[in-house]
Image (cartoon, rainbow, N blue to C red; front, side):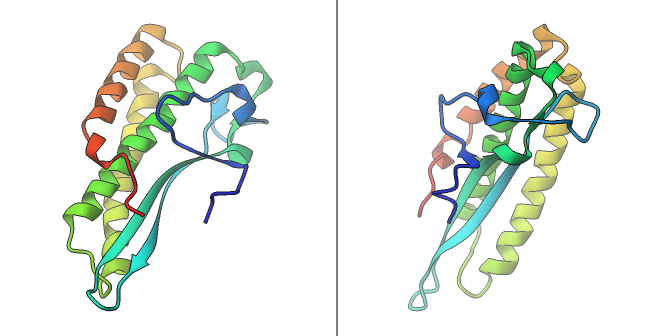
Length: 166
């Protein structure tokens, strides 16, 4: 669905954001940079014969809505934005796990998947806000480093769910 859109970056292990991934502009909140991230799911297979479904979950960075002010193009700011993308991937994996663990089938997939997404997204939003609050938007390098380590560990926990099943 999104495969050919050059405006979108799908999270990849080892791939780091660069300033070329951002659009120069004024972020809408009190920050020098603002990443536009989403966790998106698609029902990619539905079997009318056995009722089974398969869902694809993607962690997406949208370049055209990701803003950085000219004064914000500093290494520490870019280093602050990468963990936001990584946190989104942690929660994309949590959503994949929730889908895997649930009893989704053709008859309930639309309602149940939306409910699972809402639950994961609430936790995701709180985690992103805590990240920004704890390190004051990238201003404290030592705390930033602690969070980078924490997020690296969080990425290991749901490692079984890093791949899509579609």
